[in-house]
Amino acid sequence: MPDYRYILARAATGEVLNWNLPLTEVEFGPEKSGPGSLTATLTPPFAPSLSDMLNDAGDAVILVERNSRLIWGGLLWRAEPEGVKLPFEASGFTSYLHRRFDLHGNLDGRGPYVEADPCQVIRDVWAYAQEQPGGDLQVVVDDTRSQGKTGTAKDPYATSKSDPRNLGEIVDEIADIDDGLEWTETVSWRGHQAERRVVLGAPTLGRRRDDLTFTTGANVVGEPHVVKDADTYAQWVIGLGAGEGTKRKVVVDGVRNGRLRLESKLETSEKDETKLKQRARRERLARQILPTLTELEITDHPAAPIQELRVGDDVRIRLDEPHTAYDAWNRIVGWTLRPGGGESPERVTLKLERTLRPEGDDIEEQ
Image 1 (tube, rainbow, N blue to C red):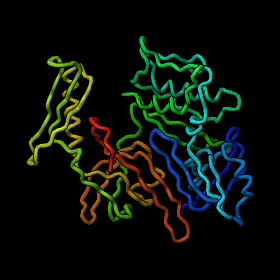
Image 2 (image 1 turned 30 degrees about the horizontal axis):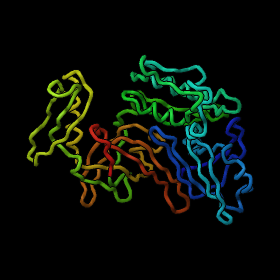
Image 3 (image 1 turned 90 degrees about the horizontal axis):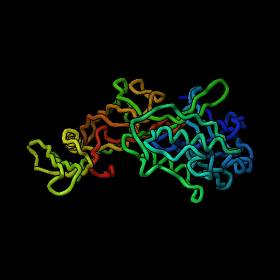
Image 4 (image 1 turned 90 degrees about the vertical axis):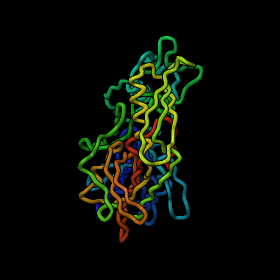
């Protein structure tokens, strides 16, 4: 059984308040372009003063260590007693930005932004937040650069002092820019200090992991829920480009595969017909994938050690279950880890999306 330790520290200084919080009912994990979360419970008689924990909400950091390696960190936000128990909730460090505002406008002179790299805007948001008195959370942001652009000469990306923008909402907005970026959070020991880091991926996080596999009979547990839903299926795609009326570019990409013909329409602003054809073909390939898997429960295993899991990575999943034969690549967009204890094993629930996803619709995975 892995050795877990839960550490409570001051948010601003990193001063450790408790090196070994006695927690139960722990669940935590990171996510793509989000802060991730943790829930847990403190239970007497081993717990420190419950009133101390209540007072630390909004001013303390929870760190999770697995086998002496930090694997999660975030801010304690809420604690609500239930008799002698104290359930509490924490979120990753970026949740802090949702409690902060741009009081100066344009991040105190860093904007307005014209043809700016969205990665730089996110770095500027963190720099602005942490330079304000009492606002330094000691978060480091990667120096990654992207090909995305935000703001134009005619319409710069700007914020106003008279209408202060929420800093967390700015990050969410910037991360949605086409060809921009994704982000996640990590925490690791640097000497005796826990480094809090925002990891940027441009345009995406992660890589293809040929070294990790998830297979029935090895590290897959529970009952995998694979959905075969033809609502989004199509083997013919109509790609629409820029322009109007007869000037609008239209391409059709399709294949006869013995199934009933199903079509889908892809709206774009592409002016280049070659690029439009490429996007239509990619959309058709994505829509020809019928099975969908959004969650998978796994255990620690040499085929995919828990410490090797990374948000954004593409992994191969092979299932041989009743009613389900599945072999496909999926992307990890987050996970929830339950440490277990006693006779309860350690379990991880992977949150997944298709490696190749349609772009034509905001498809809600089942």
